[in-house]
Image 1 (cartoon, rainbow, N blue to C red):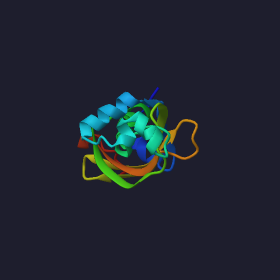
Image 2: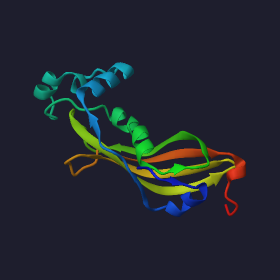
Image 3: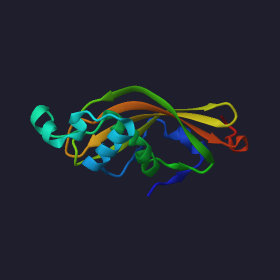
Image 4: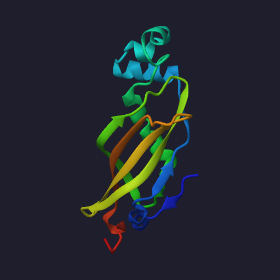
Length: 162
């Protein structure tokens, strides 16, 4: 169960592991739907027979961008909810690295470490998370990245000591 914290508590979590998501199954149906949505039908993603015989992966793999995009759902079930938050904004990523392929039929989950949290203006808190996506039963993560988000809140809710 995801816990709830106050805006004033966020900065106290810097340097700590703030979330571990549930496992997500990445199956061929999900990979095919992503291929359709992005028009990326490269055989290593969408043709199991060909990927088995012609690639070094032994079958199809998820698109790197599919794996990256699953961080959104991992975020929702792993990170603490901030009571005062009115909206969250994806500001972008620094240093995204695709470390290992996610094979069709495997499960992945996200690890989140709050690296930084800085107030910007009267109603925003910019957070940076060191994220990694673990592949079940694998030593190497699927990806690592620094994810920057903005927590928007009503200016009246800004903690006094910031």
